[in-house]
Amino acid sequence: MEKELYIIRHGETDYNKLGIVQGRGVNTDLNALGREQGEAFYQYYKHVPFDKVYTSALKRTHQTVKNFIEDGLPWEQLPGLDELSFGIWEGKESKEDWVSAFREMNLSWQSGQCDLAFEKGESPNQVSERLQEAMDIILSRPSEKRVLVCMHGRSLLVLLCMLSQSPISCMTNFSHSNTCLYRVSVADGQFNILEANDIRHLANSVRVYP
Image 1 (spheres, rainbow, N blue to C red):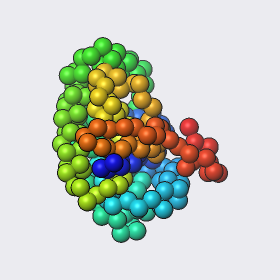
Image 2: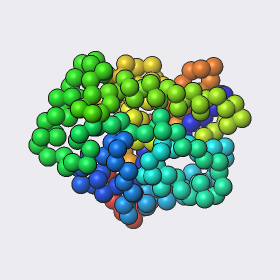
Image 3: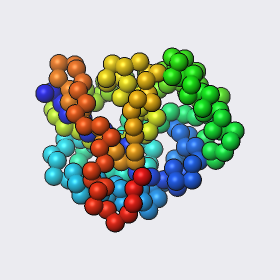
């Protein structure tokens, strides 16, 4: 095995809780539950000898893995890991107009029209291009054998399609809870998903997690 990636989604924000669209253009903080989720992940995985922490440029990812960063692990922000931009819908509540627009767009994406984007937003194919650039950087460092990557829900779904060599239209085949873990091995340029949507670190929390 050349490299092992621990890829997680950030913890919960108030926008997640309230169903408000975030995306790349909304730089929200974790809420109390999100901070607990990040702490629970840290307590469960702090024994893992990570060589590096990678996050997106958005602070909800930084906050999720802050304990690892404060432990002194090298940390690099890669904007290529940012969330998909939902354009004009970002920051708006997910009421009927958004739900309808998203349902229609999601059906288009599932049918293979992954060049489509919301007005002033990004398409999944555009996200895949910058994700590839980010992955090229991560994979280019042979001394980093085990890395922690914190990113976002929709961009994570795109990345999982890429790693599993599935069409981007298969995004909905994957699940992505807040602070879920996808553990991926890399050998000879091939990716193998070893653990999927793993939230065992939340099992002993006093809070109830979705």
